Length: 169
Length: 223
Image 1 (spheres, each protein chain N blue to C red):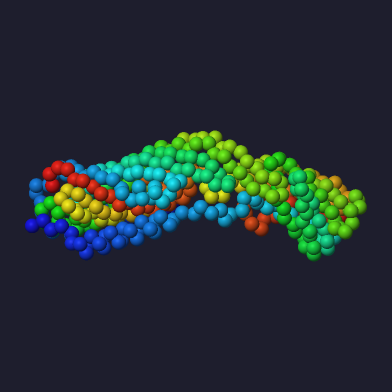
Image 2 (cartoon, each protein chain N blue to C red):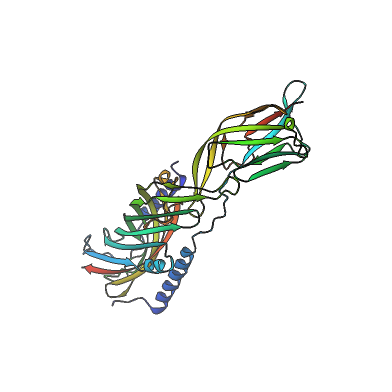
């Protein structure tokens, strides 16, 4: 005799199915929680007696940067700084002010940085961010002795120092 | 990278399809392959479509017994998706086809009994069209950037494991749900700008996806 499934079995089947449907329907994220910008990091050094670069704590310096509006990073008792590069052009000009309270031109250096840009997909909620590949860096030499690229790829990797700046002793 | 997940999927599928059919209760010498065909639709998709206005999909299934405990399954459908937020805006659409085998777990309690649980393996293919995408990058320091990514067409390949139930609710009408776990075979195609949703697969920005179906099928032929 043909036995069709009992009502209880069908109910169980239905409830398991509905639970799974609800669970699978929740599996979507539409809010962007990841930043669209990446940060370039730099470090300040001076030469020891053997000429090797050693960390230098800056007492109160500024790095000034930006587009239509200028921004600055204040470096107080630190030897590192971080800032964003422009996703709109292939180069930026930064200003290093060795003493934030003194605007004398001989205490300010201009840093010129050239790079290429690459779009990197984040997610459908966040869109894209721009990664950079540093090509060249140079500066005036009022306070800065030399400047070089330590890591050319500026991407989402944390705690990488991309640029090293040696200060005159 | 050919992911470890792909190999895991294949291994699990191999184990499922080679499991011994020891749960069979009756011998049925009158069995012939492809005598009884079931065709149906996934009723969960219209419900998803109602609650997710940014994605639409429709799925249909056809299956037929190849052996007493192994069914061939052909599934196809179509769908589209739309991304429209502050940072990204584009549309995509695709059709898809999945081919594979299902292995049932239980024997027939009586002649013609087709209520069963199953596990199966599928190979999925979808030709995907993605329209041009407008993006915006917020940058409070240097100014906001925006641009257009040109449209693109590409093929998606994936394998999936599935498992579920089918029960005959009235004569020749079957209902049942199944779950699916899937992984791309060509994930590199989806790194630059994947569709938010690929009908038949799921989230295009994930290398592994899970989905759910609730099929109602109608059977035709001799059992």
